[in-house]
Image 1 (cartoon, rainbow, N blue to C red):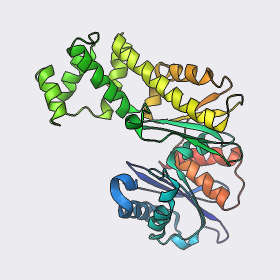
Image 2 (cartoon, helix red, strand yellow; image 1 turned 90 degrees about the vertical axis):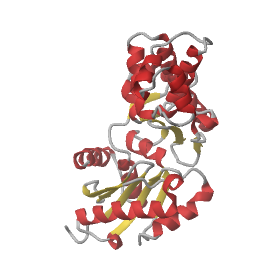
Image 3 (cartoon, rainbow, N blue to C red; image 1 turned 45 degrees about the vertical axis):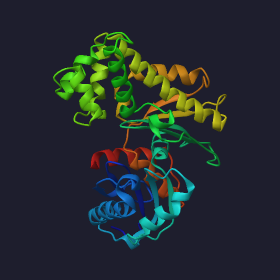
Length: 328
């Protein structure tokens, strides 16, 4: 490796995994490392440091460089929701020995930077959970939801969709709402003897219906079950409402802007995205929708390049995406 090559670090720290990506000033991928969860809300600050250290060590070894060679870094951090958390976050990062200039953002922003050609607009996440953040073209204003999920009235990732589906099956059992094929699906998934056993087990935590069960709701809807179809329409509309909320905060209603869709729930396609689009277009008719096609850590690498003072055009962004996908 040429001694004058610049080394930039992008990191995506999430609730399930931590990814570190080393690139040069031209967007070439030099090294990659992966570790376990680093969200301080689930593993604590020491857990964040440990996950980052592991991913960083692997990436540095892969690239043949040391931590001291890194010129600048960009971080997308799950759980970095409030300004008051930034000092503790930087302290946890600093324990790895990383001391270069850094740009820290909530991990939702990474998808926006990686997926939107002009790197501004709104990102909406629907995976295990849900979130929605955005910033304006100049990055002088941020719009966001709380990220608190169903407890804060925000949906819908798989967790929130499953919670609503369990309610629907409960209402069907008690004759408050129409019958649904989801009843048999959930009996199968839990292995319960019958509905009383299932609900008792769910309340006592003997049975659990995890977010990974959410695809069964889409399968049931595809078979024509009205309740399942209604749940998915609810989820899409909820996601649209989050985007609309951020649109209003940023005053994007009359603008042409990108909405980047991130997360496994969007694999369902139009059955979920159509109600979301209708909701958003009712408020912002010029919004454009983009499905994120590369790992969010690409957005962290772009932030690192910007932090280091290197221009990032479409050629660099495309190269980063291609080479990162090839590595991962």
